[in-house]
View 1: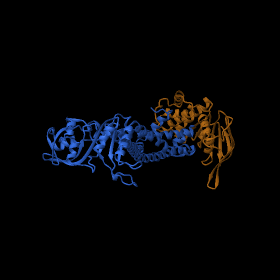
View 2 (view 1 turned 180 degrees about the horizontal axis):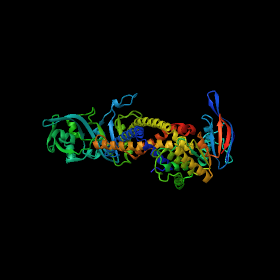
View 3 (view 1 turned 60 degrees about the vertical axis):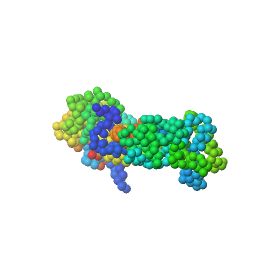
View 4 (view 1 turned 90 degrees about the vertical axis):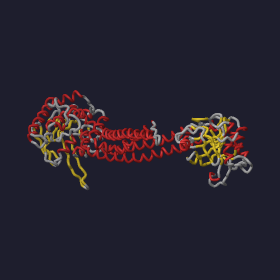
Length: 408
Length: 222
């Protein structure tokens, strides 16, 4: 029922009286809002996925990597360094508040089983790798200390490797060949999905064994490793451990005071913070691109509102003759525009939300619609109505009642 | 009630000016029923708009119930117009998407006198008690004009202005409308000013004012 004392229901009546025109008018807003919702939900979903996968590693993990010449900052003399197993041992013996240290060395090699083969990342690990990298073994056991010190030819394979080489068969106890060496499969790693620290396509063997296969001795007879993961006792001690490692390695690598380090120590917190920053900007960028379509939709609303004011000139004249003040006419048209775009915003929200849910269901990407996104989309759509309805409403309120009454 | 003194209205026409009203003096007492007659372009509509506060005079004085209203701003004009003037137009001017009752209530709304009961009584008074829910396009011309009359009286204004109220109606409906207006005038002592060029309609009024070229040229009492 129309209640003429309520401007909102007058606006509603106007909207449903001109159904087709209202639908066409709000189409731009509908498309704009759904684009904003979809793109922002994809941005936020991706951010959440990556953050979650980073969090599986825990915030108290530090990574030490060698600084290669290619990674040196521009304009500085290139610094090339390397990390060694001996560096890792020094960290274990001389730095307090450490749970575990896991040096690793990775080389890409062909892995053969029966008539199947693939190229995999062969990673030499120590027993502490399991703890630091949060690795779970589905069948079998992780590499133990005896196997490590005994140069055992055992391997743990990721689920992808297992499927490629053995199909559906249980690979436990079977053999794989890496170069000229035969390894027994001692276990299969639990899938981690496509995450930052995924070991799905890895082959883990004892670090000692790897160094036997591909000897990487430095000129001073030390054993090179590609990275050292360190698990600090807790999150609080992580930064103290980080500076202790830095000082220790500066001493061991004979870095002169003020010179560039030939290694990098980075904490999980820093990695996730920098990734988050990048992804937030990406989300904002995506939202801004979608915002352009909202702007176009808003101009469409203004166009229709101008037409509507012209069409309803006579009505404006009648209302004014009955005693309506300019501000009442103004408010009415502004409300009309805001109701149109608000409705468009709600429809767009529903569509955008639905498509986001479909995207998530399809498994390609994760799209997360947050409360902020919803509030933003609805707020912006009402704002567009008010912004682009302003000029038409103002024109309507300024009409001369006599001229308005004469128009047809 | 209505005292116009030396009212001049000019409209700019390029470089020259179009003088529509050239010093009109008019006095209408409370409870009078007055007809204004004149050829088209004589300025009678402008005069009625002036009385109804839809337009402002270029110069002159207009006392409405003793208060000067000639130079009020648009907001105050709208307020006084809503409360004191009931308009009846030749082309009815109802809002097409509202029912008869809602149209009547709309008049009360802008007069700041909402009263559903009074709106219903006004429609009953013009003989449309059974058609309150009908929209304008479901009513005949005569019925639509009766809704417009109900809209004008439902807010109980001291003055009703009618611009060719029977101009779009057949003679039967015209007689009905005039009977209703005469009745209102007699029963409620409403001041009623109407424009017409139909002498039969004009003769319902006690006083006929003739206007030509923006000036009052004569007056007749019946």
